[in-house]
Length: 440
Image (cartoon, rainbow, N blue to C red; front, top):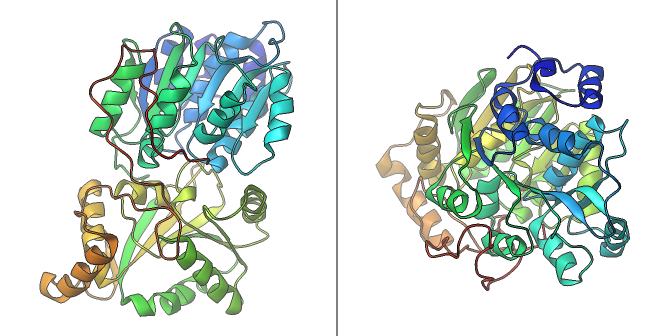
């Protein structure tokens, strides 16, 4: 498919695309948009940075063109995403396509004023982009209704499952009409994702832009084998080799990320941090400063691994190896954006050898060694055993979730129950379910 003009999109959307320099659809857009324009349900497999937002957003916006102003408290299209950062980014992208239209786009996330969100929703909205926890809060307050919602998008659905949002999804689905169009986008396709699609999608088209685990060609990867206590000094020396270039550093825990940020700041680096303990305003200010280049280093937990589109990021450092191997791909996908080159460096301590093996299994190839010597099983064994004990067990190569909060614990949700195979008929939303609800 050569250009967007062949897709049958509304003229105002084509003008907006052209004004931003977009003429040719990406593979996921070329595959998905024709089916979505026909009203089909769809399951899309694509990494972040492949143009997913436009793939689902443009057909939805096309369908909303020419409609009268939405009734109070109603929502015509609902897009659910797992993190506040991704919600805000999706909204910004959609607004860039609708500047010359009357289409209303609203966002609701935790950490922001719920009273302001209530006022916004009272006027009615065409597109609502939301995190599941805050949306449930607003539904329970009867601040909006989803009974007229005709489009539902679950973006980064695999991460929503990782973060324990399955109960929230079931509750939200109870408020939606049976005749809606449902779209599910995910970077990976675990068994639970297939079950989710079978429950909420009707005869879906399946499109895939890139195999799960595939890394962008322009990313130069490497790993250093280093003792845990020597990581900070190694990171310092690496950061000094590229002054003036943006670097994203991933840690595993909130406390560890804050500690590293303070250390880098004391060493004279321009650095900030984001993680689940930061308020919404703190996270927004940190991202804005990083995006503008006012700070050169952003230390983050996996809350920032997906969806963030900051084309100027040149370097990604895995200061801690991820517990979930697929998150490695999402982390390093924050570089090499918009056709640019990028570099991804992992710092692997002996205790993290299991995590490295799981990542290389996902990649289907070893990561080139930049320094140090890969420890043998015998050498790494005691450290690995100690690390497993501190995390309460777990098997390398399989996603692990850990309790929320506290010092030294992963910035993730509480352990999620498995998606039950026994569910009510599709589009009724399933049982309410118990458990803890997160506000992202």
